[in-house]
Image 1 (cartoon, rainbow, N blue to C red):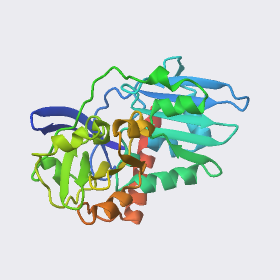
Image 2: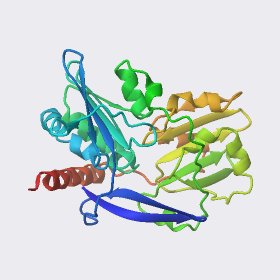
Image 3: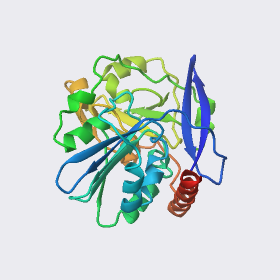
Image 4: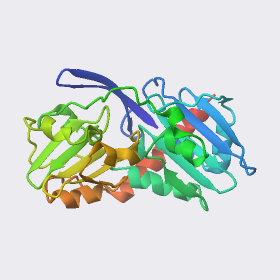
Length: 307
């Protein structure tokens, strides 16, 4: 795996983000703290909890090694009773040996990018043949719910809403091959783009429409976004999707009282159909995406096992 570290600046914001790139494109950059929880559920039903301070970025590529190697890697970590919360958990994986269930989520990596999402999940299913592979859209809370534990233990409901800044049509981020953006379409006439660096715009509720009143119009957004929302004011319906995770993902109807809210999970194609031409990302080249992820997975494994 290769990483690039970029300073994303937009409308006065400067946010340091780590972005995965195919190994053939860029060289490896230094890693920063990226915390992750790992859970191994024994056949008896008891679970083991592990903490990795540098395991979230590259988590999806680590899992491509399959069950045996992944379990060996996880058990080399320090067992820890620290459950990372919504804010600090940047990735997680659960391996249920009895039920043969693999659950995961990440903030960064090929699994969170439109061009590589389907390919990564396809290769994970191939590596974990006979297992059920699930994505945790609600982050660490969903992991605890699976274990029968209280999800509120990892909720951070005291932090205020952190909205992503609006981007101009000529913002340099949109020229990036995999921009970190959320696309917002309203009805069949409006398209806006936000930097996807904070909370998902669906969390703003109907107040999002007020914020968009003077926002720069994009006409048609053709960027391969990693999150999005379509708002139909006439029918009072909302559909939204995300390729990473969003805290309280299944509680969004509470933020839109009087509206019908549909969570599309990672099905961005539903947004394309609903927006009627306002959101038109480039087609995904499946063969190229599979090759990218395979190559990066192999290089990541070599780097991880290098003395």
